Image (tube, rainbow, N blue to C red; front, side, top):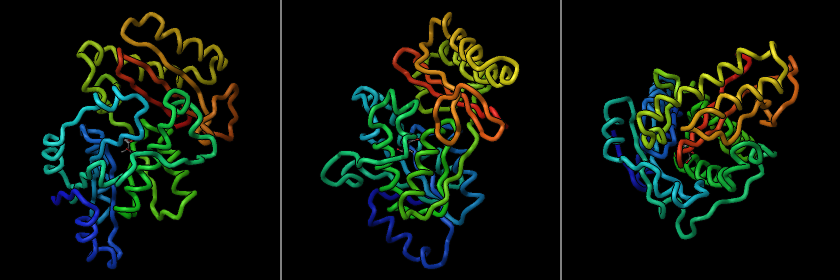
Length: 282
Ligand code: PAF
């Protein structure tokens, strides 16, 4: 496994492969790797000639300084995990390598996707994600890039980014990897107590409950039921619950058989923010 810190080193390594139509699979991460990331890398390595992971805690996508400071950084452990799977290249740039002189986001128009859900609570977050993902795509030039379904809004925004630019990469959506109790794997889970981790089963249980009730109860009753699940939960504070159109990500008040929908949840366990989603169609 090759580890590169600069664009120059990475370009040099890729020089001989680019001309040979080599399929490059890319998994961008912010480190603190878990089985979810490893499953994306495994999928990439089955589908590509070379698999690249990046580890970069992107400062411009954090709207709270404490969140950036507290983001888990476990580089040594991450590299050990990557060594044991089929990852060919790891790119671990510094902030200066990515942002050169100014650490700031570009402004993107994602056709309104950026204003829903996460966009309402994390101002500027998706400009930060768009900025770094565009920069990383331009450096790695992947054929396929792999993202987890848990961050579905991010996934749709990255698809939009690719559509609106000349980036020639196919975005692949990968199933959410879950703990035994249904908690979606996330680097943030490392900051949960074991009691919170156990109780966090309520998130996926609620999403499944919503799916189960769809078509049997009116949407407003389902919405009310979902909120009630968190009312008596001392460990979690619900930030939002929504049933949204998969394409526009807008909250819906009725269901059309011609469209696809998802339920989305964001909760806080103390200062740790957790999100999850479920398809209501499949
Ligand atoms: O999902 C993440 O880990 C990050 O948002 C990403 C896509 C690596 C960009 O920093």
